Every structure is written in structure tokens, then in C-alpha cells.
Length: 428
Image (cartoon, rainbow, N blue to C red; front, side):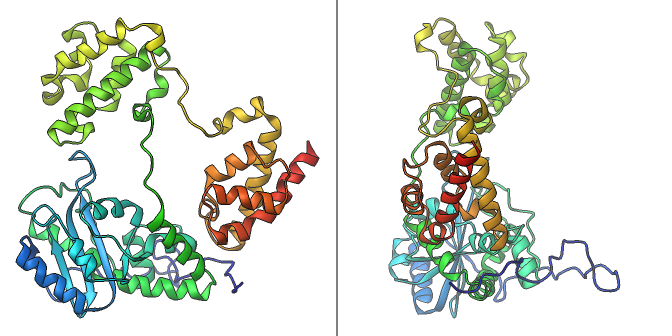
């Protein structure tokens, strides 16, 4: 195996507060203000898109890709702007509402590496419009593998390239039309230096012996199957732990589903229809009349108030619901229970988990990487809760692979985890 660094790579973090050798603060990194070739016009028709496809097909090197969504404003996670940049092609801003099919662009770039930051966030919406990378470089994931503590795009660009990106438009409503020019400038700058960042991180990965690990991770991101929908998504309602009765849980479920229906029909974020806190409060108070319901703050605002009859109908539906139709307190799932209950339910499993976590922490420290990137915490919990019948490096490796651990992860951890499980059994 290539040499693996045992300390954090890269230049000193400009935010570490250490200053220079004389105790003076580091000068602020220069702020990127305009794209190098100026702000490109937004691509909003097929003729313009065809010209962009031709230009990018004739370009060289990797293609930087980013997408802007309207999270918190619209229902779902569709793309409302796609940004691209490639050497000898320049930058492009594409409106995927006006140009909803980018499959032709992908077909014009066979085998071309696409560079994204936090690809798992953008790949679903890019796939919806036909832009699917054949090869991937994920700058956020590269930063995690290299042990960077802050892996946001702005932090990475500042730390690695010594430049600053303005982030004041990161949470705006990208579904509005026309998009303001300062928003478009912000969006174009997000891909302006993405390939430069990729080049610097790739060099660090190679120097630290982690480049092959990164390639495995990038390939996994591309081939990973879509996540299965949660069986009971309403159970993720913030504050649901305060609901103590089955009938109260039933109210959470019914109000959540009613809110989701309204949000989908209006193409608006569910949180803008009704706050989670209002759902939880209604589940606790069980209001029986409109005045009682609207006394709960969020139910009294304009949009939520419009649907008061629907909210009351949902609550009353639960009030008369047979006990057998009410949801059970425990969330369904095929995994082990919450780890805070292991000491009582299975003390031996709790000891195995502690031993496994300790072993992984040591490996992670040695290779300068967060333990959760060395091995998924859920995989570790499943191994500790239900270890193989015969514990050895081979059987542990097989179980890790069953839970989608990559080859490099198995190579680094299987033998160490098998030894940790044996130690826990001996200590018991």
C-alpha cells in the first residue's frame, strides 16, 4: 500500500486563528467577484443549448458541474439552474425549466470526468434531467478522505486555493424567474475554480496514498442504488419524541400526510404549509374545534388557516380510530435498536460495539480520516449487534461487503474488527 499520511494535509487553515510567526492575523483571502470571461447568458432554448453542447464537446479536461435547487421553497428537489465549466469551453448557465432534457449534453461527453461538490446532493436532480456523469470526482468527499475538518465548498476553496467565494445567495428561491444577475454571478462562480480545486485535491490524494480509495468512493457514489423511501416518513417530524401516546402519534401521522398532500399539490415546501412544531403541539393538545386549533400559533397563519377544516378532519379521524389502527410507538426497521438501549438489552453487544469503535478510531487517526468515512456507523452497529457465527477476518470481511463496504475499507478494518470482537468476548 502506498504511504498514508498520519496528519492533516494541505496548507494551514485560514480560520484556525493561529496567524503568522509574528502573531499577526493571516491576510484575508481575495474574494472572487466575476467569472473570468464575464457572466454568460442563461441558456433557455434548444438552439442555445445546442451551441453549448458543441462547445463543451470541443473542450478539454474535466467538466465542473453544479446545480441550484429551491429547497425550503418548493416541493421536491428538482434543479432550477445548472452550472457548467470546462477548459476551452468556458462557463454555461442552463435553465432546466426551459431546457428540461440535458441527455444530449451527457452523450456529447462520453467518459468525461465531471467534478461536483457533495455529489450525493446534486446527482438525483441532475439524473432527472438526463445529465449523468460517466466518471466522477467529488471534491467534498475527497476533502473528507484527506481529513479536512471543514468540507463546505467555500471553506475548501479558501483553504486549498486561497480564494473566497461569496455564499450570501446559497439559500435563495432559485425557482423565481427571471433570476437576478447577482444570483447568476454567484452561481457561475461556484464552478469557476472547481476544476482547480479538483486538481489540488487529486495531487494530495496521490501523495497521501488515498487516490485509489477515492476512486472506489467516487465509483460507489455513481453506482449506489437509490435510497428506498422510508416506510413511515412522518416519524421524522421534528419534536415527535414529545408525543407520548399512540393516539398522539396517529395525529402526527394524519397531519403530516395531509400537509404533504397540500404541499405536493401547491408545489411548495411542506414546512411552509405547516411547521413541524404545530403538528407536535396538535398531537399533544388534540384540539376539537377551529378556535382551539388556530390558538396553536402556526395554524393561525394565512396558508395553514386556509386548510383548518382539513386539519380538524385529520385530528377527528384519529380521535375515533380503533386502537389497532393507531401507529406503534417504535419505528419500524431492520437494523439494531438504538445504541443507548444496548447495555440493558444485550450487554455483550454493547461491549462489542465499544471495542469496534475504539479500534476504528485508532485506524482513522492513523490515516487522518473521520471514522465515519472509514466505515459507515450503521455498518459497525450491525456487525456488533449480529456478528458472524465464526468471528475471523474472512467472515467479518464478508459481512462488511454485504453492507456495501468498499474494498479499501475492508482491507483496512476487517482484521482489526475481528480482533476487537474477540477481545470483547474474552473480556465478557
